[in-house]
Amino acid sequence: MAALTLERVTKQYPDGTVAVRDVTLRVEDREFVTLVGPSGCGKSTLLKLVAGLETPTAGTISIGETPVTDLPPRARDVAMVFQSYALYPHLTVYENLAFGLRLRRPRPQEVDTRVREAAAVLGLGDLLDRRPGELSGGQQQRVAMGRAMVRRPRAFLMDEPLSSLDAKLRLHMRAELLRLRTRLGAPILYVTHDQGEALSLGDRVAVMHAGRLHQLDRPLALYERPADLFVAGFIGQPPMNFLEGRLGPFGDGAALIMGEIATPLPAALRPVRPAWLQEPLVVGIRPQDVRLLEGGDAGDMAPCCRITALVEATEPFGNEIYVHLAPEAPLWATEEERPTFRALLRSGQQVQPIERVRLALPLARLYLFSRRTGDHLEA
Ligand code: ADP
Image (cartoon, rainbow, N blue to C red; front, top):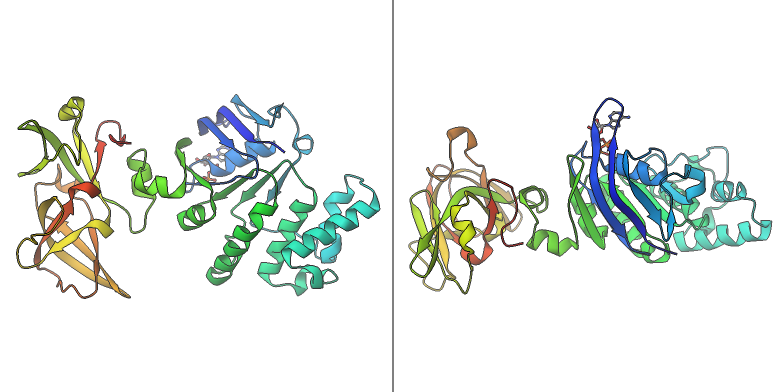
């Protein structure tokens, strides 16, 4: 078994739409890579390119040492699992599992062994005589997965396979996939628009936007070190807050300037490169990291910058409250660009709508992006 590699792959459809732009991506053998991004970002196209259902305009695709870019789908030996299971309703579970395998004409004994092996792994052993109509959605999903497994393909491609299930079953199948994936024994590329699914299933997660691969990284790294503004805003729930700012010289080091608020940045905590001093910035902070300053500054607090904001609404969330805030001007350039700003606070903290509150943004938790390029300056 071997890795799945895409090298500088571009796909332009005949109508001029560039669905995939210069994507380089490697899924190691037995690695589970999830591909996530908003609708229309090119996820399905990328999967179709690997499956051979579309041909790239540029770039190469290989599985192990074998270039497959010009091979027809059947010759690539990849298995695709879709959201619609497309099981044969008149065939039993056993026959559904065996069907695709028989087309490849192995010895009959081999078919039986593989079907029973997959059924055992998937917990379908007692259901082999049933027809799809007699199965729950989750069981049908497992049959669809089993059908791909029995072929022992060189790569698995999964296109939102859980999206048609209800929320509870989806969580259940997610847990099953986590258990199963180590037994699939090939690279797995899994498309989803659901970041929760992407982060929980993927060994690594590929984040796409407008045809481009923005970052391919471990889930925690995406969260802690997003490569750019898009990834920062896309990964994390609730989403990261953004304010405008810039850096100015201050003593031996630099200060972060947001509106009329200048906060010295201790060099040991946030080293600043001289080039950044000229750069208009977007300053990011996650809602979980915003602190409420109650009754004056807390003395023991880590170095922070302090802003004032108006409470617009509060939403209780179990043991937390989600507070919608309007930071006071001028922390953004124009009224149209006034940012939504949210804080996730512990429930004990009392805030009321239309109250003015002082907030502390811990310097260690800020993200600095170039407003020009969107790049995360410290990534
Ligand atoms: P996703 O799976 O992320 O929702 P797709 O890969 O389906 O995105 O689509 C990416 C872009 O390519 C979209 O702008 C879509 O409208 C366009 N697209 C998809 N298929 C075709 C096609 N056959 N012809 C022209 N444009 C297409």
